[in-house]
Amino acid sequence: MEKKLERIKRSIWVFHLNTGSCNACDIEILDALTPYHDAERFGVKLVGSPRHADVLLLTGPITLESLPKVINAIEATPRPRFIIALGSCGSGGGIWHDTYSTIGGVNSLVKILKERGIEVDGVYYVPGCPIRPEALLYAVALIRGLVEKKAKPMVATVE
Amino acid sequence: MSFVKKIIKPVEVLVVASKTGRVTIKYPFEEPWISPEFRGKIEIDPAKCIGCGACVNACPPNALEMIDSEDKKTLRYFVGRCIFCWRCIDVCPVGAIKGTRNFELATNDPLDLYDYIVHTRVKCRECGRVTGETTRMLKYVLEKAPVTENYNNKCPDCRKKIFINALSMRRTGPVGEKT
Image (cartoon, rainbow over all chains, first blue to last red; front, side):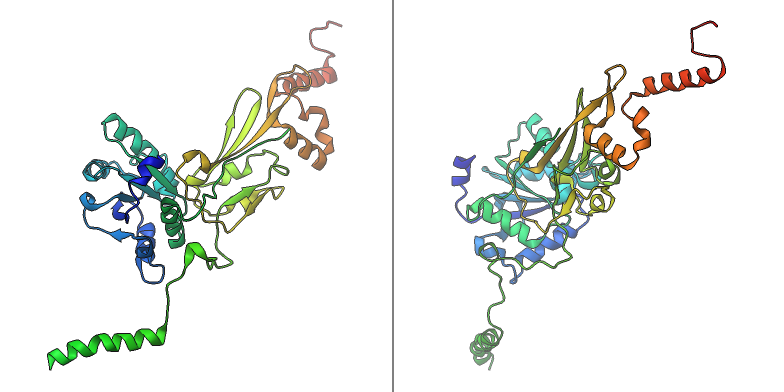
């Protein structure tokens, strides 16, 4: 994982991949690119084609209607390719995790991709509903190694 | 004329920019500004939680789940699915769940998104079978209503048996005994 990250020391170019989200996370992505938050400080640039991108910003629970298009977009991204799953829907399926028309988050997407022989080099999860623009900046800073990871699992056994 | 305008325009922009100053925040290197109403990740206090499952019923996206096993009852909190509505805080009877303003939850390891609290399930006093409640919940109920002590730590089958026995004692005497 770290070896693959070394190859992405250049500026990360992102492609915005909406997979049926409610547009709240999409608006926060636009917010993060404005001069106030200025994601371009870390070299983040929004590109119009997945062929130019290093990282896919995936928003929304992946609906069955959008699944073939999502797979096409991920297949078109050059290696090493990373996914940042944004929001509750992207990272875990959110409130639609068990509905009939979604596959429920990025984990099941990665499983489907493995079956088809498409590899993803790393998945970053950014929970939030919707995410704050700062949360996206934090994830980008985490990829660049500027901040330390704060999330920790907790296991407590009580009597 | 247009050539002169081309030269003047950047200068005008410079004047405006010098008036407004820097607007960009230095976020990862300084404290972010968060409003006091902002709702972030919840924290469950394992010292207070009784494992009653009120938060599990209230949670809209099933981010809080109760996983039953042989003799353990595990409360699992999955941040990746949480919509930060804080309903669990409203319904918690003991105030074990506390809301924070933490939003820096980004991670590359999916296991970082899970919190577990493992409770032990209480055993039936009569037959030794494991019942549904946790040890702490039983203690909590007994504190609130000491009257229930007779049948509270028994499994449903034993409760039924005791009830039928008591009822038949009132009418005809104990079951299975001919008088």
